[in-house]
Image 1 (tube, rainbow, N blue to C red):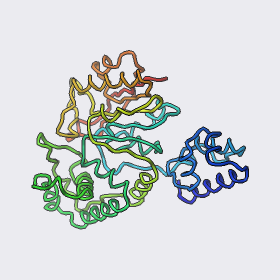
Image 2: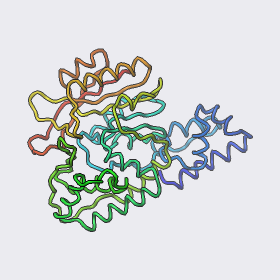
Image 3: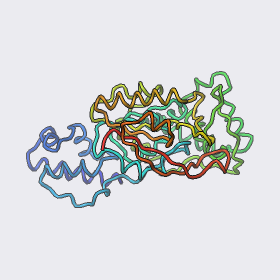
Length: 351
C-alpha cells in the first residue's frame, strides 16, 4: 500500500481518537490490538497492516471503513531470488489453509520467503541454514547495509561476463571469504542466483557454490521497485532473523502463534528430487525429527502448517493431523524432464 495512503489512514485514526478524548492505551484496549502497533499505524509506519486490524480500530471509534477487504494491503512483494522449493505457485492453496488469525509468524525454512511476503506480518521470526541467503534479509533491515547491498548488485550488473561470473563464484574458496562484509555476501548471492544456470542454488559437499553459468549476455540483478518495497517492509516490521536448526528457530513460539514449515522435501521413490539447498542433507531422520517438532508445537497450542511431497512416509509421520493433498508443478531441476506435475500435502493441526 502506498505510503501516502497509510499516512492518511493514520491521521484519520489519530484525529478521531483525539476528538473522542481517548488515549492510545484506551483505544488499543477497545480495539483489541497492541498499543505500540496503534502508535505505528497512527504514524503511517506500518506497511503490512491488514484490513482486519484497521477495521477493528475504525469499529472501536464508531466509524465505517469504506474500502473493500484487500485494498489496505501493500502492493504485492516478490521474492528477490528464484529458490528451489519456492511457494509462489502454491500461495493460493496455502492461504486458503492458513488460520484466520494468529500471533507471531514463524518460518524456520524461509528460503525465498514467498508466503512471508504475501501475508506481510508485522511481527515475524524467519530462519534458514543458508547464511548467504540470510545476509540479504539482514541487509533489508538496515539503511546503510541496504545502500551498500544495492551498490554491490549494480557493480555485478556492470561487470558481468562469463569470466566475471566464475571469478565471483570462486570467491567462497578464497581465504577470508567468511570475513567479507555482509553486503558483499548478499550481493554475491543474488548475482549468482540471477546469472547461473536455471536459477538453481546448489552447493557441493564442501559447501561451495557449484552451479555453472547461465551464459547470459547481461544480468538484471534486481527489480528496483520491488527491492525498495522489500526494504521498506522490513524496516517497518519487527523481524527476528536467525540461522540454525529448525527446533531452535521455533523454541519461543507461544500458543496462538503460527509456524509454517517448508523443509527440503521427502524424496520420491521413483524420481530424482532436488533437496541440495545446503551441504547438509535432509533425509528420513531429519523428516522424523521435524514431525516430532510439529507434534510438540501442536501440544503447546501453537498453530502449525507444513508443506511436503505426498509420499507414504510423510503421510505416516503426520497421521492424526489434517493432511490436504494439493497439485503442484516442480519448476527447478537441472533436467527439463525432471520438471512437471507432482502432488504435495499441506499438513495442519487446526481446522
